[in-house]
Each structure stands twice: as structure tokens, then as C-alpha cells.
Length: 91
Image (cartoon, rainbow, N blue to C red; front, side, top):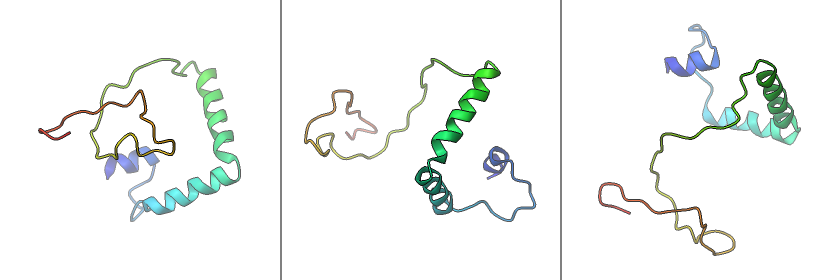
């Protein structure tokens, strides 16, 4: 987990990283109190001021995951942007 520690700027003195559920509860508190949007706006403002805001780009990697059929949504319709793919002979 050294990369996680480095990303979170945690020193080696911390015995362990927070659990996923702890981080999720914190995120929900931020969203409940409208702080997530404010924080994002502030970060975007700082990045823009420093000329670091990314305006366009493309994702270059993908991970295949098991997912339900695209018609298992609320409207029962197929998502036009969703496509099936094959991995190791399985769809």
C-alpha cells in the first residue's frame, strides 16, 4: 500500500489506512452537507488559476468487469452507448 500512502500523503507512522467504509461514510457526509460540490469547485478554480485544468482528453485503459444485461435498468431499454465484449471466450 505504499502508493496509497503516498497519494493520501500519510506518513509511515500511521499503522493502517482507513477502511473503504470509513472513506465512503466521509464522502456521504460531504455530499449530505453540500461540501463535495464546493470542494470540487475550489479545486477546479485552483487548477484553472495554475493552468493545470484538463479540458479534453481520452481514457486509455479499461478493465472488464461482470455487469448485468444493459436492459436491467429502470426503463427496460438498452443503453445505445453500451456494447458487449468478449474476454477469454466469454461474453
